[in-house]
Amino acid sequence: MRKTLVIGCGGVASVAIQKCCQNSDVFEDICIASRTKSKCDALKEKLAGTTATKISTAHVDANDIDQLIALINKYQPQVVLNLALPYQDLTIMDACLATHTHYVDTANYEPEDTAKFEYKWQWAYNDKYKNAGITALLGSGFDPGVTGVYAAYALKHFFDEINYIDILDCNAGDNGYAFATNFNPEINIREVSANGCYWENGRWVETKPMEIKKTYDFPEIGEKDIYLLHHEELESLAQNIPRIKRIRFFMTFSQSYLTHLKCLENVGMTSIEPIIYEGKEIVPLQFLQAVLPDPASLGPLTKGKTNIGCIFGGKKDGKDKNIYIYNTCDHQQCYREVDSQAVAYTCGVPAMIGAMMLLTGTWFKPGVHNIENFDPDPFMDALNKWGLPWQIDYSPKLVD
Ligand code: NDP
Image 1 (cartoon, rainbow, N blue to C red):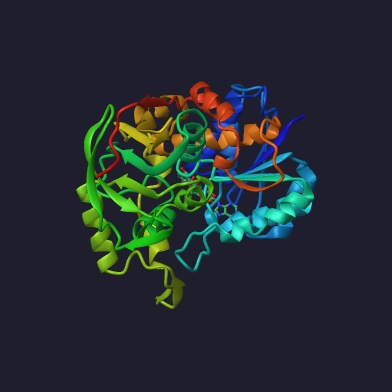
Image 2 (image 1 turned 135 degrees about the horizontal axis):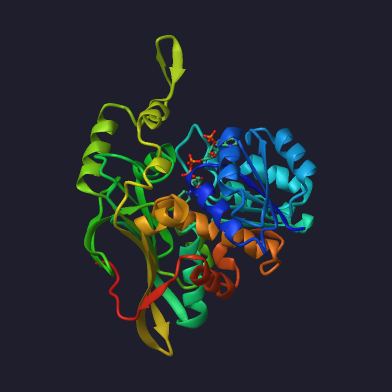
């Protein structure tokens, strides 16, 4: 019996779990474990009678290694799919190591008290995972995730060398709110209020938040403003794509979102420094999260499409060449299928596929690896099959 333990039961996990249940030949048995067990039970109840996958639920505090080890020992999964928050990555990796269980996540570790994400903490487990004969697959969402698979696929099938990558993340969806985030608000705001950064000619170039603004004409969407951000896959792709000269990440934001964000920053509401309020310590950003709409509630409200992909520039047979590999996803179509908007969908589907790659042994490489280090072909086939079909534009321009 193939068993998968899913940790977390929020927006992304809900999609990934529903996709696992559509794929019950592979996901024969899953356990949904999270901090609030009632959410796991509600999802199990919703799926009852719709799937051949056997589902159980459990409570776990993923900050507590002993609780995690006890749960893994009791349930005996082959793979742990971590869809909690980036703060829990290391405790979950420790528990997988102690129990010799494969590990998959969608976001790299970030210490809760410092808004800084980096792979160094997770890469440091490489030798231990290798010696234990288990695989950690890092970043199996869309970005990071599918963007890395696109890079490996482009290198394998279209280029002799890739020199430039522009990753584009466009959400042209409208949820009717003046300000709401499409995934966990705390993680999202930490990401977009940080300095921007990109890799060029062997070094990191840092920018002020939202300092670099461009426009891009997206297939099926049209022209949108895009802003340069730092994003975690830049770090791994800069190392793993040979002869890369520049790699950047751009995301769309509406003017309303940016105006609200600036205002919230100016009044201190995005700070992660604790303050004392009425005798109790609170973190302003966590308080802000509590008053913002829950991303999981945006599903029925969001209309429009996402377009996420990578423009690659490089050489084939001595000639310059550019291609754009991308997916477009429709918010309302996602809602009809899994009661969720496209941002959770575009992360939840590749999370399921990453777990499938390890569970079936399609990918087996003891150690700690980013997704571009594996053969991209089976993952690209699975994207077409499981709801995120990709397309290729053979004559795009890099962002200028
Ligand atoms: P949510 O906040 O909706 O869900 C997080 C879940 O984790 C909740 O169920 C929460 O429990 C649970 N959780 C939090 N802390 C603990 C803990 N200590 N122990 C056990 N469970 C815990 O977040 P999202 O679903 O939006 O995001 C999930 C992850 O996906 C994040 O790491 C995010 O960065 C990543 N992501 C990656 C993307 C990609 O493309 N690579 C895109 C979008 C998101 P509770 O219900 O009790 O709060």
